[in-house]
Each structure stands twice: as C-alpha cells, then as structure tokens.
Image (tube, rainbow, N blue to C red; front, side, top):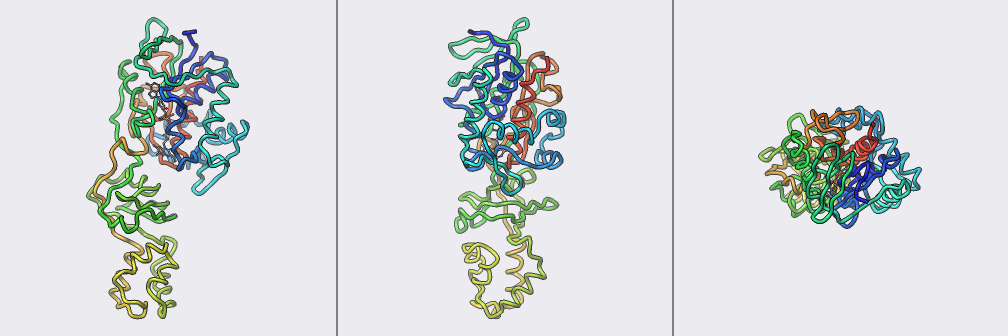
Length: 390
Ligand SMILES: Cc1cc2nc3c(=O)[nH]c(=O)nc-3n(C[C@H](O)[C@H](O)[C@H](O)COP(=O)(O)OP(=O)(O)OC[C@H]3O[C@@H](n4cnc5c(N)ncnc54)[C@H](O)[C@@H]3O)c2cc1C
C-alpha cells in the first residue's frame, strides 16, 4: 500500500505522539523515520533516563518555554503535561518525579518510554517504517507525494516532526525547514539555545564536579539550578539557561552557597576560628571545590587576615567566571528558531497557507529549557497535530 490518510515524517517524541493521536482518531497513519530506531535524541535526554516531562503548573510550563511558549496555550488546553503523565501511567509505564519537577520512568531507562510509545502506535493500528529517509515532499492537486531515494508514498495529511538542527547525529538535520521553505513558509533564523558555556576558568581542576542548586548570575539574570564543570567550561541546567543571555566576553558570578547569606557566612567562620580553612570549607561545598578554594591560604581560619576573609567570602558567594563563548548550534541541546509561528494555526498546528500540512515539535520556532519542557512541547504539539481537526 502506498497511500495513507496521514504520513508523519520524523520519529522523535512529536512524531510518535502525532502517530498515536492520528491512529486514535481512526486515520490510516504511517510514521517514517530515517534512523534504524525511533527516538534517538529522546533516548539521550536526562542522561539516558529520558526526562519525559515536567509536572509543573501551566504557568511553570510557560516559564520553562521561553521561546514562544505562549503560542502553546491552545495546544496545552487540548493536551498538557498532566495528560502526558496520565498517558504513560495508563499504558503501563510508571513515572517518578525528581528535583525541579522533572519526570522520568521509574525504570530509569529511556527505552521504557520509547517502547511504550511504539507499542501504543502498533496497538492503535499505526504503521512505522524506519530507515526511510524522506528526500522530497510535493503537493499535487490535493495529495502529498512523499519520496525516499527508492520509494514513493502519498497521503491526504502530512505532519512534519523532523526536529531542529542540534545534535544532527541523532537525525535532526533541519529537513523540516526545507519542507517549509519548499511550500514558501517562512523559517526564522536558527540559533543555538541551551548551549554549554565555554570559559577560561581553571575548569581542569574542577572537571566533572556537579553542584546542586547554585546561583549563576550575570547583570539582572539570576539562575539557581544545578551546574556541571566540564573539560571546556560549564554545563548543566544553570549554564544552559544562562546561555540565552550571553555570547562570550561576559563575567558570570557563581554563588556556591546561595542558601547562606554573607552574615551567616561571617558567623560560620567565627564559630570555626580554630579549625582549618579546608575542613571548614568542606562543610559548605564539595571536597574538591574546598581544596581548590582554600589553596594558597594559611592553615587555620583564625590565621586569615581581614582581606583573606573578604576574598574567601567573595569566592564562595560571587566567584568570577569569564565566559569566552558558547557551543555551536550542532553541539547545543536545543534549536532556537524554526518554522515561523505566523504561518501556523495555533489550534490545529496546520499551515495557514497549505491545507493538510502540519508541523509539531522542535521544527517549530519554539524552544524550551531542558528539564522536560522541550519534550512536553513536542509530545503535546504532536498529539494536537495528529488530532487533525477534519
Ligand atoms: C543531549 C540532549 C539532552 C536533552 N535533554 C533534554 C531534557 O532533559 N529535557 C527536554 O525537555 N529536552 C531535552 N533535550 C531536547 C529534546 O530532546 C528535543 O527538544 C526533542 O527531542 C524534540 O523532539 P522532536 O520530536 O521535535 O524532534 P527529534 O527528537 O529531534 O526527532 C526528529 C526525528 O526526525 C527524524 N528525521 C529528520 N529528518 C528526517 C527525514 N528526512 N526523513 C525521516 N526522518 C527524519 C530524525 O531522525 C529524528 O528521529 C535534549 C536534547 C539533547 C540533544
């Protein structure tokens, strides 16, 4: 069979969910994926555990989607993060909540999430073709013609869920933007978002250390979240979020102990006067950070001069980190920009110009913080695009 009611291009979270809803609404639906398996990028999220959604309120959800989250009001009124949670629970995939509302499968394995989505597609009669790379799409009369190098298919409704342009090794190489351009739809400029930061901070010493809930600030931008020191600089949610506000050349301030005020810190040092600097710092920060910060000072707290103490306070509460740049789009977690939302009906995610052509997920000009917000946007928009209001 070469004709389908609906063809979905791209088997990430948006495409899998679009296939599920389209099949659920009784459409003969085919999902095309160029990789050997579905959900390659999804599999790598949450450190391989799949950060499938976030259990926040609608306001928290919109805050977690700084790139045009408001466009998703109508989508979330039809299918939101709580529907995602219900969907997985009802389909035998129990989820658990971790810090900052991040949700994962209780198995701690991405495969459980991908298997659940894939099983549901089969259960609803949807079809999947992997290792099918779409190379061209045309609309002739009322039919879409979808071609790979050696096969031709047709459909009445086409849903494009090919993702952004970050991590192209996972399959998302921006093909959906080419489809949009082919149909003369505007595509906004593509940029790196949620990018690890390059710094000339002595990161080798601290490489691999992860800090919980520290505060990174630059001008009025203050972000409290987890931070990771890497071989090139900074990663983890705090750095990824800060990447929206810096380019390179800025000086960041890192507060290692945001829960402790300067006054409390002064008192703490007084109470520990007789103790060694290193052991005292170990009570505040991880051991390797304490080693690093105490380097070059006298042994005991009581031996420190006023200047030394001031300097130590500053290092703990506002450590200077110069940013030299950020990772490229290909090495960033998320793509900012995509199919221009002015082209898209927010209720149906159908193109305003080309009837039957829908877009969902990261191919759209929507970008969110890591923490489950991008995946929520992909799953919810996928469901709505697949609901095909016709
Ligand atoms: C390392 C990493 C960690 C991340 N962590 C998080 C996180 O913790 N929380 C969060 O919310 N988000 C996270 N993200 C972002 C999140 O994974 C993406 O936003 C999400 O996967 C986008 O879903 P999508 O379905 O729109 O696109 P994708 O997941 O990119 O899927 C698109 C699919 O389309 C297929 N495709 C492309 N072109 C074609 C073609 N021509 N023919 C056939 N198939 C095609 C691709 O192979 C791919 O499988 C992370 C991203 C990365 C890279």
